[in-house]
Length: 92
Image (cartoon, rainbow, N blue to C red; front, side):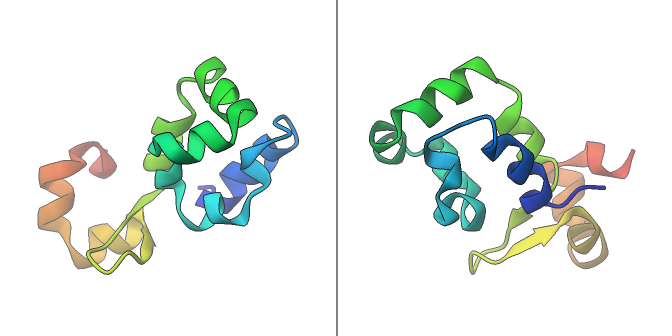
C-alpha cells in the first residue's frame, strides 16, 4: 500500500502550484481549506479536474485527536472501534 506522501509525490509533477507546498504533505486537509485553495488556484483547478484525489488520500489513513497522521494499519490495531464506526471498508 502506498503512503500518503508516496501518493501525493507523483501528482506533484502534474500540478505546478500548491501540491509542491510541504504543508500539503504535512496536512492533506488543506485540500479542503478555502483560503489555501484561493492562494493556490492552479492546485484548486487540478483538484476539480481530479475529483477522486481527496478520497484516495483519505483512504491511506487519518489524523488522531492530536493531529498526528497514522496509516490504516495503525488505526485498525489501535482503534478498531473507531475504524468500524467511520471507515468500515478498511477491514475489507
